Image (cartoon, rainbow, N blue to C red; front, side, top):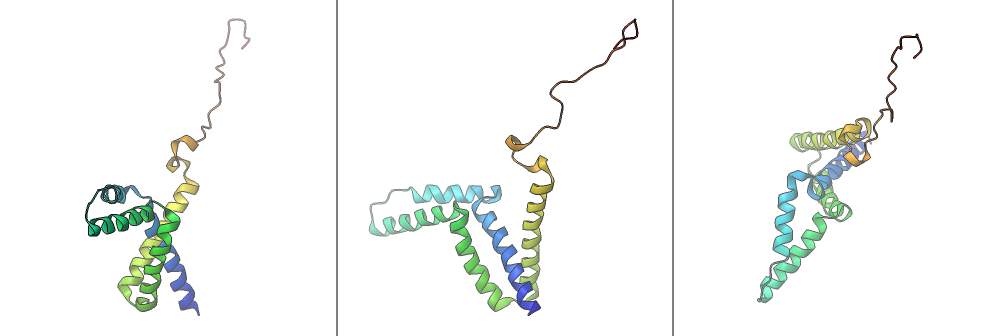
Length: 138
């Protein structure tokens, strides 16, 4: 039973990390943009229009976290089912899960990692500088 729970949790973490990688991370942004450009190419042939339709669907999927997560989860589920005992698969699942958890913790614990528009400055709105005057009053 514990093995099933561990496999499930690793599959969950792997799905979350790979979904973010595919749909949001800057690392794959150039790939997503190429996909969008390919989806908007015009073609006069039936085969070209069919390819364009598939590319449009793929471009929609990789720009939508919810949409991508279904497909990523499907692949991760199949891999977890057939290769859960494989050491390399297990190590990759741990790496992806830890990467995702680190991102969550960094966003939660370190406000500097958040969107700059969300950072709250903890400085007083006015600085009070106290100077001594000749008569001893501040």
